[in-house]
View 1 (cartoon, rainbow, N blue to C red):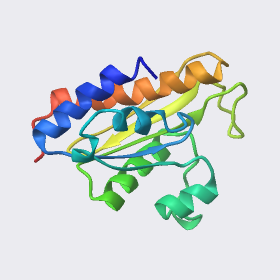
View 2 (cartoon, helix red, strand yellow; view 1 turned 120 degrees about the horizontal axis):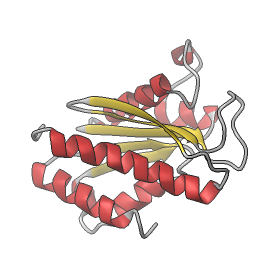
View 3 (cartoon, rainbow, N blue to C red; view 1 turned 90 degrees about the vertical axis):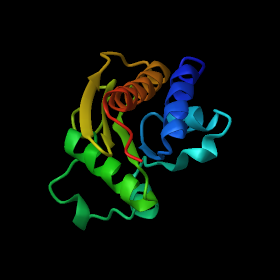
Length: 165
């Protein structure tokens, strides 16, 4: 988690300065993204909420996404990650919605993705989605890599985009 804190502090400072907010949907990063963002003093200025959406049950209960809305989508894919980012943004009325969905390991997922595969996405004034493949079966290292990838995606967008507020 220590490696995530400087990124969370930088992102939190930018969001606070701009008066922007973020909401998080994460899966195989297990809550590390939300924990890092919330570790920053003053997080209530920018953090609206987060959910670990690890199962279909959680997806329905926390984001209101049932089977009908999943038609044509599969977990751990770029379209699904972007759908999650859009949904969490809309449900929280946030400036930015960010999402992560993948397979931390030590084995892959039921969709054929290897351990170390995730898709990270953001929805806001711009939308971006990236697939990350670590090539590792190390669950904890992958969780950190996935959280890092999501922070890098958001940090890059914040640096490139003028304030949305």
